[in-house]
Every structure is written in structure tokens, then in C-alpha cells.
Image (spheres, rainbow, N blue to C red):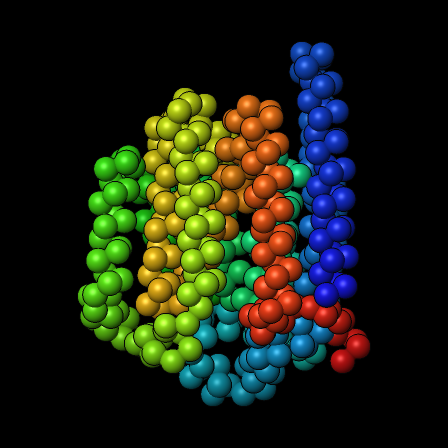
Amino acid sequence: MTHLLLLTAFVLIFAYLQSRRSRKIAYYNGRCQTQNARKDKGTYMTVALLVMMFLAMFRGINVGNDTEEYHKIFINIITNPDYANTTRYEIGYVFLNKLVGKFTSESQAIIIVTSAIVYLIFIWFLRRHSGNYALSLIFFFLFVFGASLTMIRQELAIAFLLIAYDRCVNKRIIASYIWIVIAALFHSSAIIFLVMPLLPYLRFDKSVAVFVAGVVTVLTATNLLFRIFDVIAPQYSHYFGGKYSGTGFLAITYQLIRNFVFFCLIFYVVSKTQDNSVAGKSLLKSNQKSNMVGWIVFVSAAGLIFGYRINLIDRIITYFNTFYIIFLPNALNKYAKKTALLLKTAIVGIMIAYTIVTHIFRPEWNTIYPYEFFWQD
């Protein structure tokens, strides 16, 4: 518990320092209109993320639900050729293990390499697309940090999808598809993002949202969802029973309410203003940005309804939730100053409280704390 509180305090302090720096830069730019006006590079955010990267790279084998398993996978891949050919793990991740194994047989190396890849891409992405580094830092800590210590393959896929998103919003469609395919080579579920380059051209409005929400509800309330999975992905049929089905209603309800509130806040901004910088820096037209942002945040909210039948669906929704680290800060910047401050305080306070309560009452959900380094094992 102490580790969690200390790390939370560290993140909040650096977020405060980042916000102070951003305000100073903004004030300077407000008085200086020359080409040489200084820009905020997200210095404190970057330093804080590098510290978290260090913790992720050198974590002990017991930190994170699956860290020990990934140590075993690395050893099996580099020592047993047959294992590499028969394992269920994706070819991209197997190749990365083989590549790292060419240089060392120390299993901690795969944790170091994968953590570095994920964090460096996130730093690059946030510096390019976030309009509020301080808040993005907090949301990274609340949304991504825990997952980065647990879901290694999926976090690699998410990192590559961030690159695909950057290419997509800058109208580099072929490059976007290449990065989506690369992401799928590390976690096959990332293949659902093949539709991402199409999202700017798929109209999103209230009637569409109501229709999709209705379909999702019907699929969840009936056996149609099961039948669809039996046809398109029979290998995942075991997720309809056991610990993945009929449990965790409180957690799914919390996530559903949280994501719905985020969706409302973001959609209000993109529907009321032509300055749709919620999507970050891009070459897309205003209405195309609205379509893309609308679809991503809506799926992250509506898709959780499936979680009442298949709890593991929240792992898929993690792909969409990740984009809140830029969408939500950018959207909150568009609210009036007092309203934005109230919303930021409420959102951050509630999410931190939920994280602490979860750690106390359901520590088995994410064994991140207490923290230990790998040389302490």
C-alpha cells in the first residue's frame, strides 16, 4: 500500500510541476508572438514516464500477474525450438524473444526490452498529440501503468497501434495499415483496428449511437453473442464460462459508468465546436476528426456492456480506453476554466480513490504492489 501511495504522490507532484511549466510557457507565448516563442516539450511528463519505465523494466518476477509467465516463455523459446513452433503466442512476440535471446539468456532482458519499447512509444505519442501533458501523465498512470506491468503482449500491440493512429490522422493510410498488422503480430486481437483508417469516413451521430447501443444490448441479453463467437472465434468459447463469465459485475459497472461519462464529456466538445483538436495534431478535416474520436470513445463505452456476459471483454476495450489519455485532456481544455478545473479534480480524485479501494479489497486483480526489483528475488 505504501508503494502505491508514494508512486501516486510522485505522479501528482510531477503533474503539478508540468502544469506550472505549461502555464508559464502559455503566458510567455501570450506576450511574445514571434517565431522563436518557446514551446512546452512536456519535460516533467517525460521524466515521470521515464521513471515509470525504469520501474517496469527492472520489476521483480512477482510484480504483475503474468511477469513470471513471460520469463518462462522467453526461456522456453530460446532453449526449445519445438516450443517456438507450437506455442499459441503470436509470431511477432516469438520473433522478438528469439532476437533478444541472440544477445543474452537472462530472462529479465525481455522485460527490459518490451518495457522500453512501450514507454518510449507512449512518450513520443503524448508529446505529439496531447494538449495537456500534466493530465495525460495522470491518465497514463491510471490507465496504462498497471497494464504495462501485466499485459506485455497487448501493451506492445497498443503501442504499435498508437503509431498507426498517428499515421492515420495524418492521412498516411498504407503506413497505418502496416502498423496495425505489426500490432496484430504481437496480440491477435489488435486486428479489430483494421477498421481504424475507415473511421474518419464513417459518419458518427446520435442516431447511429442509439442504434449501435441497441444492437449491443440485444446481443448481450441473448445468446446471439455466444453464437457469433462460436462461428468467428471458436477458440475463445471457453471464455463464456468459468471465471470469465458472470463475475465482476461491480468492476464492469464502474468501468461502464466511467467510460460513458468520458464519452459524454468528449462528444459534447467535438459536437459543439469546429476546433476538434481532441484528436490531437492531424491533417484530417474537422468532421473526419469528429467521426474518428466519436467512434473510438463510443466503442470504449458501449462495448463494456458485453462484459456482463464475458468479463474478459474489458481486455479488448483496453485498446480503446488507451486513447482517453489524449482525448480526455484535450477535451477538458475546451471547457470554461472553472468547469474544467472542477471536472479534472473530480475525475482524477474518483479514479485514484477507485485504484486504492481496488488494491485494498481485490489485490488479486493486479499484483503490482508491493513493488520489488528483479535483483531482490
